[in-house]
Image 1 (spheres, one colour):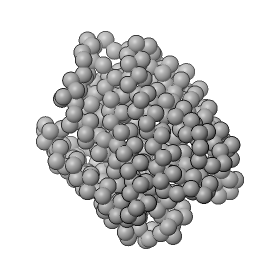
Image 2 (tube, rainbow, N blue to C red):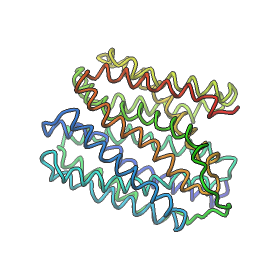
Image 3 (spheres, rainbow, N blue to C red):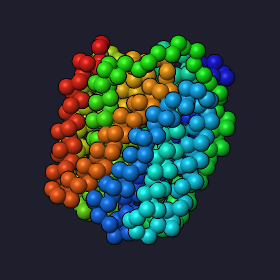
Image 4 (spheres, rainbow, N blue to C red):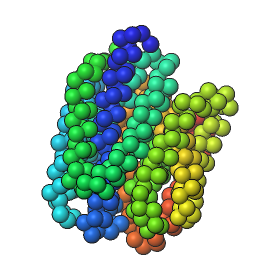
Length: 371
């Protein structure tokens, strides 16, 4: 990368990092819902409303990003996310206010996150796009450790009010950083998305969203029942595993081939939900979380890059929105389905079902990975 290009990419990393700090702290929202005296089905409803609003807003965000500067779309999204966060302090029970806040934040998430991956491919050289998208993904994932760990500290020492205020502050920093993002546009010819060709990619992405959503939404409350009140063990270990993929293992994965790398990553990903019955042990939790991070850290950016390069390379913003849409469809299914399943069957059986669902990713190996 040239000097100016390096600065542009660095600004994108910083802006996206603080946006995801705001978002990742709210991964602990299920603990706030439990604090209000509510149960697993209520957690699924509140978190699911967010996913519904994302699914509705993403196509519009993608189309808008093809017509106006993606920088403006990102700034608008961070404003919605950060502005709604401190208002949770006034929520006292399940009802319209908390559901409305989740809708607002879902729209904000759609706008901000729906354009960042596309901006990577418009800032860096095409041949380097997948690697730099992987680095961006690692920065995003790192907030899944920092945000929840800091959030746990804020809840423990200052209460939920300061927890929400600190998350809002991170979102505000992201918004300010957004003004320094480069104005980018694509000169590629526009072409319609081939939805039939996109179906395998969308299905695999939704399944990944189901497995990921089941873990990040419901593992913290499950760990509380297993005697582990601090869920940051999971988030920190998960991030460490994801960092290892792009910091140390990327060249190794290239040498062994994409199909083998894909299958191994799926196996690593599914070891956590399939082994959840032993998570009363912190060392085992850390080990399985690292493996979960290794799998997810490879699979997520790989699927994202395939979407942008294979489905509709001339409309990167819309293609990336379709990817995020598919992932959040899986998150939605996890929120509602896992919540109700947990209430009926218990957490352990529900995690096993999530692991079995994840095996679909292996079945799609040849359809997605051609080399």
